[in-house]
Amino acid sequence: MRTLIVYAHPEPTSLNGSLKDLAVTTLEGAGHEVRVSDLYAMRWKAVVDGDDFGVHASNPLQIARSSGQAFDSGALTPDVIAEQEKLLWAETIIFQFPLWWYSMPAILKGWVDRVFSFHFAYGVGEHSDTKYGERFGEGALTGRRALLSVTTGGPQSHYSARGINGPIDDLLFPFQHGILYYPGIEVLPPFVVYGADRMSSDEYPGLADKFTEKLLTLESTDPIAFRPQNFGDYDIPSLRVKDGLESNGRTGFGLHIKH
Amino acid sequence: MRTLIVYAHPEPTSLNGSLKDLAVTTLEGAGHEVRVSDLYAMRWKAVVDGDDFGVHASNPLQIARSSGQAFDSGALTPDVIAEQEKLLWAETIIFQFPLWWYSMPAILKGWVDRVFSFHFAYGVGEHSDTKYGERFGEGALTGRRALLSVTTGGPQSHYSARGINGPIDDLLFPFQHGILYYPGIEVLPPFVVYGADRMSSDEYPGLADKFTEKLLTLESTDPIAFRPQNFGDYDIPSLRVKDGLESNGRTGFGLHIKH
Image 1 (cartoon, each protein chain N blue to C red):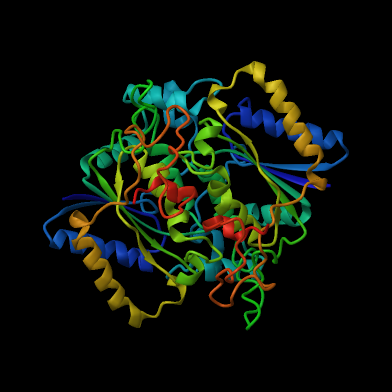
Image 2: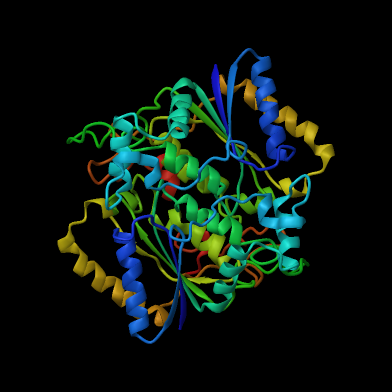
């Protein structure tokens, strides 16, 4: 199994750093190939701008159009091309990051904004009466699976069904469904460490055992059953879930998961 | 009314740039004071790292602790201090940005990650049997109101209750509730422009009229009725919404809005 780990934390000895290191040693120990994109160590450029597209930067700048033209010409910047190649190489992608203000750190959002270019991650496939492009279950990254490995400051109850922060599955939905499932990646249930700031070193061995078990069962774990876009569950082009498909009284983000 | 506009788009002549300009002229024309944080023009540093905290950067680096100590000592970097002062000066804050991959652009997330420091935006107030810090309705920015003015690539149906992207209110919840309401800012219903990439110039005057009306009624618009944390709706410290408070069968993020 070829695994890419995208890691976003500035401190190598942090809990996030330790979990990233554990993932590398565990997976390599099990005979897998592992590559790591350590965004802080790489000094990853977080901000999309015209410099990303060279001579293909339109004036006035249109991000989608310019990124698509640069992608088509192989003219995106070397850092972006390298990440796209890693994604195409990988069978599994693990994202290791802390939840900051209920979403990913800016440096990781900037990895998405720049690497998921037009014609690579979106703007792919035909539009017709039965298809609305290749997305949400189809696309350039089909056949891959991803895992979010996330730490939070707050305790689990704050992220529960009735918790003040909102349910963790809903907070992660824009990443898991909107970013990863969009270009075709299947998404495994996340590994979430709650209360990371208050964790004692005594608790780490138990946590490491749990993460190790998760890592060693990546290939046999069922992904989240998001509904694919072009196979009958949605009206096209409105892309509303067809009436009658909801189950368990689900609404909102939960409607897009099959039961 | 003192208004801060935080604007995140690289192209001044874009739809986002035009809406930002319209907000400035409309509000100034109505006699209000306006300041703009044009993040791209300012070359805003998007990534939190030890450089943000000077001598207060701990080794190993702990972001919350270091940012709190630097804040307490007035030793955060000048760019961050300037934004915190603008937030304290403002009565209304408008965020003008495109939705990229279902959330804000990295440069704007980096504004949040760096400006909303420990002891300024979080880690404030006492914990007791009846309070869990001053947050979600209380905090340093109480008395202010905010408006998200957002453009999306996709059409409105994709962001509707049954739409494939998820309901727009849920996509904006982590920003509106988790980031803005957290330090006490009241949040107005958002101004959303759908299908921005396919909009023709013929449609702009009608859109500008709608946005102008929104801008001129900011002071008289009711904010979203998020539940305050410390006034009886939540069990403390689990911070679960108490049983029986849900209405209209709401679940998930919607539970945290009163009806």
